Amino acid sequence: MTTLTVDQNLQQIQDKVMKGERLSIEDGLYLYETPDLLSVAQLANMVNERKNGNSVYFIENLYINPTNVCEASCAFCGFKRKPGEEGAYTMDQEELLKYVEDRWNDNIQEFHIVGGHNPDVPFDYYLNTLRVLKENYPQCTIKAYTGAEIEFFARTYGYTMKEVLEKLMDAGLDTLPGGGAEILTEEYRAKMSPEKASTYEWLEAHELAHGLGMKTHATMLYGGIESKEERLVHMDRLRQLQDKTDGFMVFIPLAMQPKSAGAGLQRRTSAYDDLRTVAISRLMLDNFDHIKAYWINIGAQLTQMALTFGSSDIHGTLIEERISHSAGALTSQGITRQELIHMIKGADKKPVERDTFYNVIKEY
Image 1 (tube, rainbow, N blue to C red):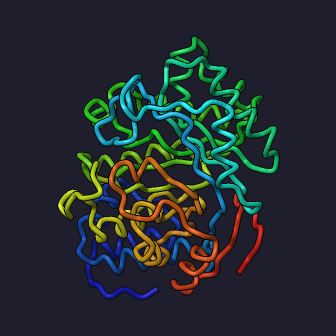
Image 2: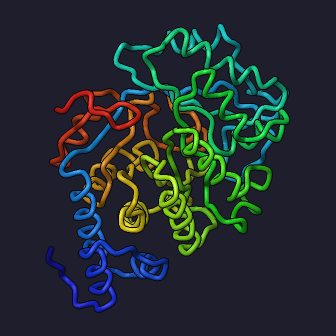
Image 3: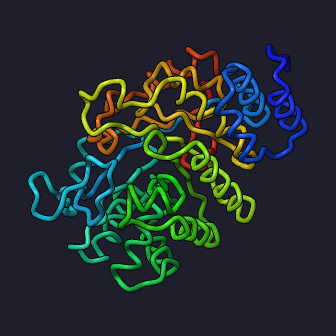
């Protein structure tokens, strides 16, 4: 690796990365502050190529939101509705199957299920959502219910989180998505999502899932009120749990979306911050195999750039994404397999179609 800088602090960080040494939060803060973004990208790209070569992964998946009714009042959410509010819905079994049938194709590998924290339905509603999908589409992996939802189920229905996970797994759950993490500091959560799982409850839900043999996902919602140090504390807490369990498959930095698609640039994260955050995620999370560039939030062309800033995954087809788009995302709600392949090849990378657990289906 060559650098274009004589910056001694950046040189010291480069030396640590080259030796495979873990970066500190102070190192991460410097990476956020240095104007030399291209050197940060070069370091992150090198780390990613060590782990994944020239491969970039994607999946054919279908996004399902069974209910938007939610007890929580997160400041960043445009998806939720209160019981009885206009636009509130809760799919019954017939509606769920019709929703999938209308969007189904035989290449879909995964159902990605996230919804509101709806206290007005019994726990069996959430179990039966999994059962009916597994019974009708046994070939599909079910990625359902965030760590925050696991805590909500336990608190609302009188179980421990481990009991909740066991019941969900018996009903067909294969993996947890990474949502509900937002920023894993209590100062942030007290302001932005006070009714949802705490930092430690979210981490506990995933640790319990890992202990039951489940591999899971992790996210970070950035671009709100958090400081750069809070982003790095978030990453550090994830890598500490990963040291303990080795249960996370991928980290997904999510750019916060404004509540209106008409919001101006001042309300959106910058391309500069998006790419820097992908690169720093790759450098800080040394024990994660994959960093995902989430095209839904940052757009196709910036996703292509992210593939040289440390990302090895661009997510999937989704078919009809609702949560980011209800909060003002400007991208399309779905994308085709051919468009995903084109996006990856356009960055001079090798497209690899995968299943949920990064088993290779086909290389292009």
